[in-house]
Image 1: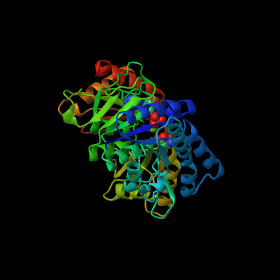
Image 2: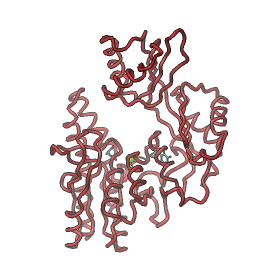
Image 3: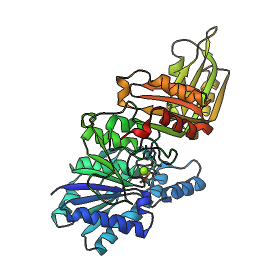
Image 4: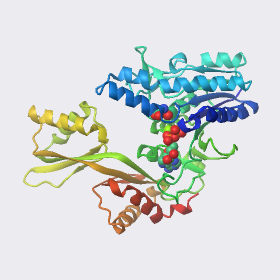
Length: 412
Ligand code: ADP
Ligand code: ASP
Ligand code: MG
């Protein structure tokens, strides 16, 4: 029998009433003859609350206990969803990650899925169970400890289940009715896209569009999962929402598919480092050993054998980065004058596979920003995206002006 995966995000299971609404949608798919695997998130706001409790109890927390606490929100919704379905007369039961068992790496708080055995759940489907409700975002490490997959990780749980069970589709139910040209909360002209290519979605997600966790798009692309994003608040229909699909399945794509932003950015500049082979390797190996995720990197023109090196990283890693650089200086591994941290920046990016064959996208982007008097601090590009770092206070203005410049209000 065909398996369908349906994932409900936090706002879609925010209270008992919403859980009932979500369960009704599941009931409709069961009535069509699918066996359904439902992946649930924690109730809206719950994961933030749990993270807050951990940080208040222990600022330098043990990541294994962080995962034990933070994964618990999903356990509640999984049980409640199974109970709601049973009340509707649909045979259902819940699974926590370890019961499947969804095996992951030991990288607590950002673990990677390693395997999902299907026999356990398939055996229950064979016995007449119609819905398996699985707690998203969590798994079990080789050491037998509970792990979590990083914020937004239930999307990845859903896609991984769809791949493992060879599901007909993976439907991600959320609080917007699809993937938009940009975050509809900050640009009212944002347009919903009927389709978006995996590559574009991957870039948008990794550049801050949190509608899907990046890793979920990566998995969908690798395993050819039919991935759909849709609203749990609107009428149910077979072609609602946005289909994330292969490039070949899109008739004609726009040069720019969307604009993404991330406010969680900081810029650090090392002033006056030696300009000679090996220095960049030293700087960035010190940072990586300290667990700093470096994103953009720029090296300035050198003068008299010295140069400045600028990089960006998430705001909550600035202290760690400064500490790592200090340590390297003290140990006389690195020599620089000072580190200047700017924690008031944001990254705004335009993404589109059409950029491979069109010129002028960068020029248009920079012109649109300069027309608004927005100064660009750092630029990076890849084949299908251009990102800039700007003052955080201009984030919304930048997104809106880029949306206008690329006429995304006409996108479909
Ligand atoms: P869930 O709790 O269902 O997982 P999330 O809050 O993680 O939902 O993701 C949905 C949110 O993603 C939307 O409310 C929207 O503000 C945001 N978002 C950012 N960029 C986009 C985009 N391009 N298209 C749609 N939503 C976006
Ligand atoms: N509840 C987790 C979070 O808020 C996972 C998810 O919702 O995808 O990050
Ligand atoms: Mg999410």
